[in-house]
Every structure is written in C-alpha cells, then in structure tokens.
Image (cartoon, rainbow, N blue to C red; front, side, top):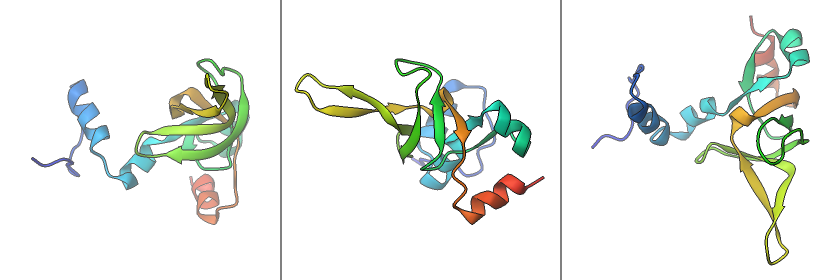
Length: 125
C-alpha cells in the first residue's frame, strides 16, 4: 500500500488528515512545524506564522509550563515536537528530562535571523 500521496489536496475526514501527517516525508513535516508570531513581530514582518528554527525565543502558552520563555534547543520533525530550554521535569531518580511541546502551544517572541534564507522569507510580500 502506498504510504504518502504527493497529489493529496484536502479531505474533511480526520482519519485521512492524520494519515497524511503520519506518513509525510521530512521535507513536508518541516512545513507542519510552524508557529504563531507575537503581536510585535506580526506587525513588524506582516506575517502571522513562521517555520520554527533552533535558537528562536518562544513563550509556552498552554500546559504545565505556561508563560515560560526560553530558546528552542531542538526540533523533532518525526514527532512534530519542540524542546524548549528550561521546560524540563525531574524524574523520580533525580534526573531531568526535557518536555516535548507541540508547536501550536508556542508563540515566537524573538527570531533567530542568522540564516540568510530565513531573512528572505521574512522580507517577502
């Protein structure tokens, strides 16, 4: 059975939507890891959301770490999760473990503009 269809347009069926996301290759999963910009950045760049990148400063909006701000340490495209610096739990044996957060629960407050390609993306329109 074919796992991923590049010609898939849209479907109202949630099962098909989940199947598309679960079977998507990494270059398409990269597009699924976008996050909202803060109100200041939204006015500055005239964009609502942008692909998240390592080094961006984000604010967590939902969950145990709500209102926590930190930098993105790593992004897991396979699971569509983001690891934020400082958002970690202490396990029973005393070790610390980072918490994986979904990109929809984050707001980008400061952008990492080291990448020239990313600067071009921001200057579009």
